[in-house]
Image 1 (cartoon, protein in one colour):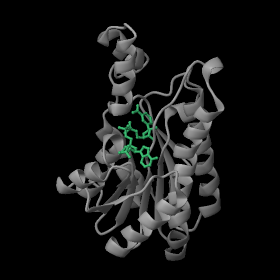
Image 2 (cartoon, helix red, strand yellow; image 1 turned 45 degrees about the horizontal axis):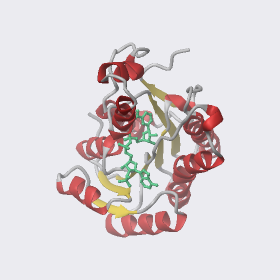
Image 3 (cartoon, protein in one colour; image 1 turned 90 degrees about the vertical axis):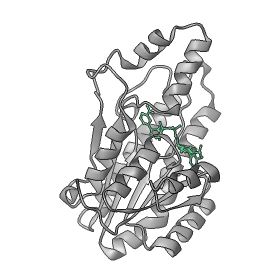
Length: 252
Ligand code: NDP
């Protein structure tokens, strides 16, 4: 297990799902973790379970709220060494039914939702000559996903942002990478399965929709994504930047 002793990590969307697993894994590896999200109660519960050291309430689509949350986290636990831009939601529909608002919403949460915390921490990271930025993108950020154009478009943009910032920070001690999971067993996929069942599909058929192309034959576990983040934050990953680490199978 990598030792991240004493490093301060900020994880957006840390109240549940993948973000919660990332917070727990970073804490386990010795980091001091602040989680951010919109739901004060859910975040406090994660802190109460010892999976994070503290929390701030901030909607990642709101730059002022993010700046305030980062200031609060820094005042409480010191400068941010690791930023994990994880907060997100999924929206999709067959392309003819997609609306500009769907794209705006997806860009707000995934692209601006990554940009705002990065802008709040990157100056300090480059000044100190150390930082790790990890964006939780998706395999949908590397290839097209049918019926998920707004989500897939925004995730591609996230990957573009990661690659561009990585070029500008190269050699500064700051690395910027994306973790690109396939389907992960969280509320996000659970909700999609429930909607398919409500439309008349069996639970087995709905689950098979997400797992049939996956060599492991199952949904990825949040903890498996979290391990990739711990690796990218570890001293051994100092030379890895601008990369997209697929957790699952990218496929054709
Ligand atoms: P969940 O729905 O389980 O959790 C999403 C988290 O993001 C919650 O903590 C939620 O907090 C937070 N969040 C959402 N919108 C905002 C916002 N505007 N401001 C602050 N926090 C917000 O999803 P997952 O854990 O599955 O997803 C996490 C990330 O992983 C997302 O970016 C998603 O796109 C990505 N991903 C997920 C995959 C999957 O199959 N599950 C696959 C590939 C990538 P709250 O609502 O309480 O504020």
